Length: 235
Image (cartoon, rainbow, N blue to C red; front, top):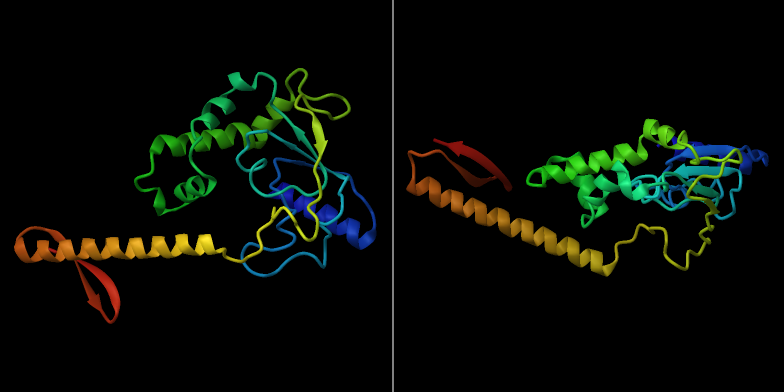
């Protein structure tokens, strides 16, 4: 996300040189939590940036139903301006984003980016891509901002601008992840693992019976080899 990196660069210059450079981003994902804890380990950016203070030099323009810029990550303490509110309910963004309601963010992201999409409704994934295009795409945001009344000479949008609150260091509202797995999450992980394991065993047992009874027919048979589950096709 280029917008997020621009915000981090602005925060870095403010902390290291004491200079506030006006920074304007579009549809940036929030970096307030990222700076505290990187998602792929226990690292952080706290030596380089300070996410615990206001960042008035940063302004982010975002569509209110953008699944990335608005919903992914908590914003740092700058200003956020909403674009695209004029005739929102008649817009393609409202049409396609409304069609993915009821699916969680993790469901949509996993289904869109991996083999887990097998069995996932194709129309939902297509609508998700269209939703992203009409709310997160740079060319669409530019077209929205060029519409009459969408943006004033002072940089205020039709949806208005507001200062984002700073998340305190102790994070009393638990806005940012800590890296710890809660007991409820652990129970879910164990349940899913056991369920998947039991399902695989059932499939393998059924395939084994199939192979023994229908030797001349093509079927999938699972067997254990050196402690690993393998699959072979037997004709």
